[in-house]
Amino acid sequence: MGLAAATNDVKSASDGEFRLAVGALRTLTGEDLKKVDQEITHSARSSVGLIPELAGHLAAAGGKRVRPMLTLAAARACGYCGEDHVKLAAAVELIHGATLLHDDVVDGSLLRRGLKTANVIWGNKESVLVGDFIFSRAFELMVAARNLKVLQILSAASGVIAEGEVLQLATQNNLSVTFDTYLAVIESKTAALFAAATHAGAAIAEAPAGVELAFKHYGRELGIAYQLIDDALDYSGFEASLGKRTGDDFREGKMTLPIVYALERADAEERKFWKRTISDGVQRSEDFEEACAILARTNALGDSIACARRYARRAIDELSAAPDNEFTQALVWLAETSVQRVS
Image (cartoon, rainbow, N blue to C red; front, side, top):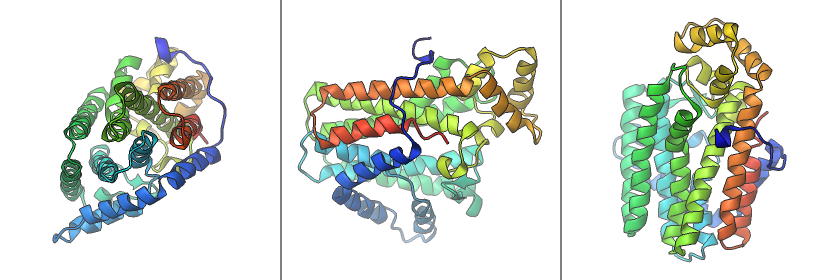
């Protein structure tokens, strides 16, 4: 199964170190990031009052701004001295925000980063339509960057993300999902935008082909690692770390890697449990606690985290082809610590 096998080869770090790594990246990209926030605020303007109100609620929920910082850092690491990387970084964050609005509707989510989701406050129709508006603003920013290559990179990623959402729906409640199918979902849903973020940054800087490819692959591997940890956090984290209720993936019958591993190792009784709770969707109040116990007993959670660490190692290795400077060093640290967000 290749990367599905368990190892533990990235230096241990705490969630606090991850926050420090994000903070270091924010310091390096600080002036650019302020301009990104200005672009995002400007993009949410509309004479239709609900649009800036709902978009403002999403912005107020915070978020680490990891994706736009990846674009900014990749561009600066490659020596870019212009301003168009700011537009691209803002576009990346707007794409992310729009997908969050749509995701929360599809998943019926109640919390996003500790606050009520927009669909709970305003409704599903409103959330979907404002998400569409934000998508359109993202494309306007891509065009404003006046670079056909980066337009192609980011627009293609938007399509892949949508494909990932559809694929995830097809895998929901399906106990036959394999590691490869699960990987295809997170490559599309999460890793595609991470890869596009770093790829676009290197491309706008007109980096050599090998360097541009290295940043693209770094983003992909980091995105996979990041999502693997998010999926583990659903069974092991605190809501403050996760940004949503723990157990949501379980309640929605999502086939994430911990469940895939647990099913591979399940005895007859455990398989009956997963069939009832995931496949049939019949859940009792105590079932989430039992699910966590099975994941611990079969080491499915531990192996999922180990898998994430290996993808983080691959992300770091990709940057060996990139210029060695403070931006790439910050990206290495981000990858090292991103897989230690498990409480």
